[in-house]
Image (cartoon, rainbow, N blue to C red; front, side):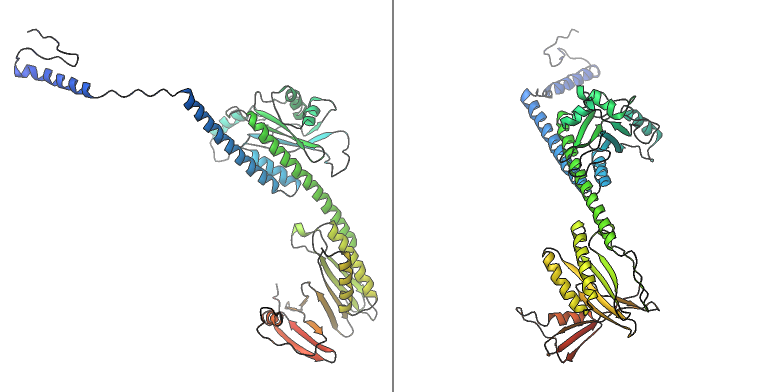
Length: 467
């Protein structure tokens, strides 16, 4: 029997067929009709040029935000350094691997300090180099790929550090001198850097091609003091024009930090020498007394400053012991310390009581300036009477160490011309009286007061644990 198509959606039979023969065709027709009823998926809209421009602008904004956050974090890390090595290390750790895969930092040798005229010839020394490394836990496959990645980065795969020249003499009028004089960072493939990098790194050193290296001069407050080379590998996106601004920020903060560290180091060296010349080389050994001293600062940063001690022989086999400290750790503190030490020696020769010595020493300190604070402890020991008299002006109290190792703080006395003995009472808001005695009672092991013909004396003792 002949069949004719009735529509494009399927084929329908025109005459009856046996049931078992027509069921498959009816099922095929129903499936075809259902498939035709399902709507076809809509075609993806074609993004116009406006949408692509918006996406590019958003990506550029994100990159700019990331760049600004990196510069802020890197400059803070560089600024945390105090000495020269810490500042250079901060630059390397901040740059690798966030900004570059490798870095070399060259500094002038020797570094000029302040207004010093730099010596000739102009020599740069490799101060530090750092690069992306493979950790010990990674496998041999990762190590091999990393070696291939860093092969164009001025690296020797067999060496731990970059095999760049350690010393470089900058020729006057040469390519490297022109780049350093220009101050601004340049790409490694620029005309100036192509000639300057081989001069800096040494002959026979491979230089990365393209925008994969940046040569950034390090200029301090008065002159160029070095250069930094930032390098990226072949598997990483090359540097962009905006990365020159990042390199300039890193170089500027590093150079200013190095200037500060060099000045601080020179000042600390001078203050240290000044302090050493003012402290006694040896202590006198009067009859009946054995003296020994040791100067041990609380921290390395407090090694230089206004600390001093002295021992001055007095008539009658007595000896005056002086320990003092001028606030600060600078040349000014050391200079003030020298003047106070000389004043204390002069006053001691007058054989004045300890409290009188500190009174005149305080007057001299006030004449030197009110912006500096000093403490001093002055004691006179009489080996014949086995008696020591101590006057203290803000200094930590002395400690008496017994033969068995027991330590105790010596008794301190405070006197005035008022015969009224002190008593503890609750001080009013406008009245300071009573608070000092309350603190003494809380902190002292023992305390008491004695009337004198000219007033009274308040004494107290504080215990110290043996170490």
